[in-house]
Length: 160
Image 1: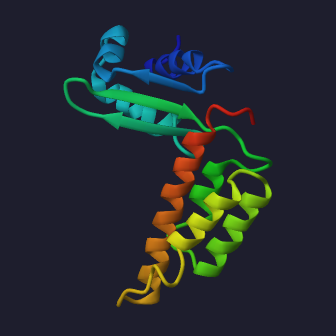
Image 2: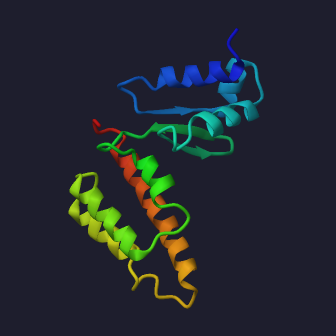
């Protein structure tokens, strides 16, 4: 007998076929369909559709609330999710960020214009605020993760 979590995961992955890299669902409708609490849906999303697994989850709560699950398209040998989680970590120096941005541009994951914008966003000039360097590196890492998440969303419709 298949566990409920497995059934929910399987159902969502079926919706995310090879052609569909994104699916939008209503949490309450999904919970009703499976006869479970919405928290069970949250559990499955939180544990089986993570960036490490190659997914980006966007959600909006409230009456017209939805969950959008986006399968991140692989870019070269590494997934953007690997970069977001492992390579950047909780802090990154300006030099490391610049190297990473350069690699992304070289692999044509981002355009040279996007690379210039990303470099400017994480530059020492941008981070010229009166806080310790480790705080600047943490802020730079957050910035990089958010920019790469945006790139992952943009790339979701392009073949990998």
